[in-house]
Length: 545
Image (cartoon, rainbow, N blue to C red; front, top):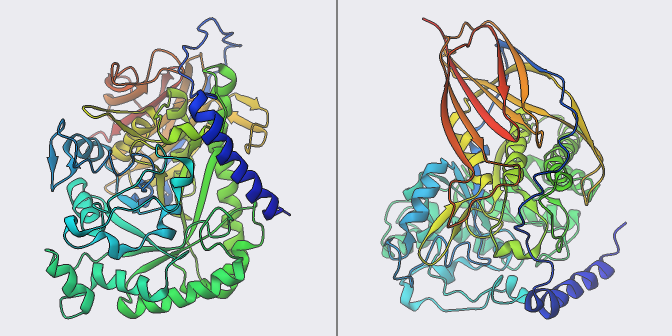
């Protein structure tokens, strides 16, 4: 059992050490060293094999797994998405950065969770509506303990209406997490009414008065965030949470019965949480949330070495282990109802500075691609997922006062969201593996060098093979055998890669890691394709006519 009193003291001590030593003295910096290109490459792996049965559909992939998350922490929203005081970049709607909007559009993100995260449990929506000049400036009630780089003050100018303007500009659905920790069921119901009520209702009329007469029809609402943890405002045990969840659900559904509710879930770190919550409140739960960050460190300086290359990629398999545990905990309780998982916070994070230093390498892009491979495998149970976070904080997109670039994690997300099709077909992979030791919260992992996802469109005339070569140095010649689909010999190739396994993008080298379009002319029902070292490759096959 975790001694929460000791844990809270440890957390407070960690914040104190960060404020007094780490940040001012520059300790435990996020590392940007060039890797040792003379590292041992290791033995050449055996040839790999992918066997595909295109007629057998294993699952339908919900587009909502291609989601992201924004929160009032660091410069994610203020100074990132919403930058109204910046005279150096084009803005629309009073503060939305056009360069950021274009990056998000190109990502094809389907849903964006807001306003948190931890921040949601201290956020009162009424402070963020009405004329912007009348909204008050306030401290960041959750994150200010870490100092102004992580928890700066904010003026509430990005509120519910600005959030919806942002989503309409980028073509994404809303996912609002209400204030459970310091809020009330009445406040949550009022927020639902503000977003979804017609003008005959009190808060629907207020929305119209604020310039938005048509209801927003927000369908997905989260009730609480990590409320099992002592770092979370309003934390409580599972039984208390479940009964209070029912109070919120009743109040919110009285306003709009059509909404879908996401309950706080956990994994084996809190072994009884899910079962207790589901036994009490399962009939009112539409999704059970789950959060995983790897490798569970807060002050590590990862080298760009082969060792840490595999340490981070192993994190995707740790996430899968935890997802499987959640699947089992749901199935054990909910015999009469299938509750899908909302994997609504996931990423690699090993240093608190990543809340304001947006550094990720190709290694991390391969990790993210491996997460999407896992989400495809679990498409029957994971119906929603939001990467954390979108801009500037453990980010996919990084801004300065004048410029923007995207990380390899962004590119992995973009490759899957753009090219993967809706239906997962049956396939198997044969390849060599790498046994990786325990690292942080990641248990010992046997990593297959070749990752794979195979999807097909509804018309059954386009097959997409996404291969992930997780080897740090060697190419993987692979025999691909396909049954029940006769492809044209010419295939489109989209390859995510860089000059070495820890290449990264920055303002002065935005495309060191990039997706390149190629062509392959030897496709058939059996052909050989060589996946380059440290790459993610989409092979798009069209059925021969």
